[in-house]
Image 1 (spheres, helix red, strand yellow):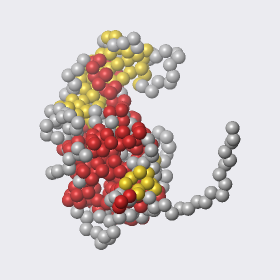
Image 2 (cartoon, rainbow, N blue to C red):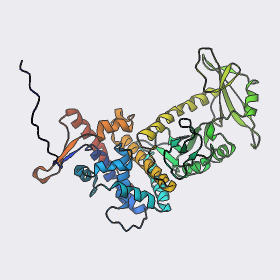
Image 3 (spheres, helix red, strand yellow):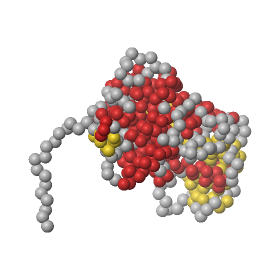
Image 4 (cartoon, rainbow, N blue to C red):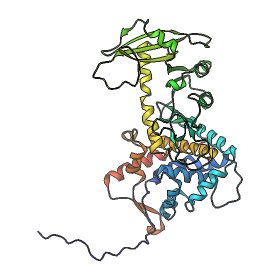
Length: 437
């Protein structure tokens, strides 16, 4: 058998204008086109500018594509400037210079953040009932630490378990559990109190909830377990399960409770807990398990030989039902990790707090557009894919733009599998109705 020799004297010519590493974004952009997202943005954002090279909607979507394609930092967007195929597929005359994108964030008026927030809310109201109508929403609340390695405004020394003593931001996030939509976000200073801003975040979440939603349920950790937050939930008639803070009055009550077996490891009990300053007692569910010598160092509160978990709740469920309902919040950690890593939440783009808060709303826009595209247009087996997986599976598909008989044609890899799911995705995309109202 003759062995083929390695190629020699291969000439490299960097003059092909039709190739792109990101041809798969065509499917997502077709979804945006049928959604009339540019007209929707242009009609709701008022930002008088002297620069006429790019519209406001083009600059916002350019930032969305930087996040979508995993370019992380705004500077890396320069990789898209020579990609004429990507420009054509996304409808951009060219891709903005990184400094143009950064100046857009820095020079934006305060009203732009509010207008983009309302646009994000409208997007949620449009897609929360797709593919089927919902009567209940489940809000998962949490915060995350974003370490700052520069001198960003509002980045202060606070709780930072990984980089102790480093300046950071501490944004609040609310995710709707069943749809995975990022319902609201709020950028906070790094030295804010544990529940500072929670009432404002909840007020925005309630305001953006469609009027036909009959039931709201909320899950949150101990950082939200304060009287004003619980009172706000009760005024809104929201059902909640919030981790109880291990304050002295709760610790004293743990020994005197009557526990019943829940499973082979845990016992559970309930009682009415009246904290000083609360107008009334609230239902408290407590679970405990014995600590064995072989157990690793416990992360829960311990007292004598037991580790404890506790929740304040107004749910009409059994103690075991409250336990299982709260454990559904475990998916929140995975979603926060995806927002941090895949949506570049940890890459602070500017030194100005207001500009960084606006960028956080852009991340929310990117996250919810991708989630809406995934839920309505992608195959069932793709519903659980992270953005990182979608990039490798779809958005990073290489392709070539050709014009046989003067008709633009996007040529992807010769694969029956790609051809099959491309047809299915486009079939679903073309059912998209434009945003209205």
